[in-house]
Length: 272
Image (cartoon, rainbow, N blue to C red; front, side, top):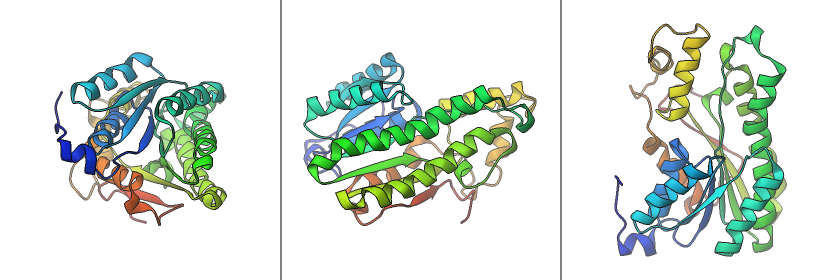
């Protein structure tokens, strides 16, 4: 395993020490980085992924580093599977303190080619999955009188892209759900915020780059990512580690007074 190795001090004094945190879509990409980083800061992490083997592989990385992870499997668009996974986690840890609704995907199509099947597939995971996560997560936080819900949005939740129409709609929906949940759960001392990355070098973007070639929006590997990244003020695409600090902030007590907000963490692509 690469990355920081935990010390006894970090296990007992990390910024999320003692917290029980579930991260959806944690079998790869940003979710995996979050799982490793939050565990290093003292959390017990539920690594939830649709692919059970991916969740188990990340938990093996955690165990190798002396950290605590619990492998969970669910399709986030299926309420019964999400509820069962959350129940398993709470049975193991005693509580759910923080939930990251991070699972998502994109399947680009030109605007006039978007089908009902494409629309429903993207919206079911990214938007409905976030709603289900908020609801089922909150139901397990309310008995304890507190909690934090963190949703993964995108620059596509701030502006529309012609070949990403369902994805953009789903991320605009994530922003709306974040505000609705912040208002609806405030009485239970549960906050809800989101963060919005831009171009992040993850397996999602690797697939997206290939998909954009397939539909004719790019001619060569890497072209689409390079063109999307051209206006990044920081001068490069992000890594998962670039987003980790924001995730840690939103999971920790440092963000206790923040709710209903979408934090742009895109290197300066969208200025709002």
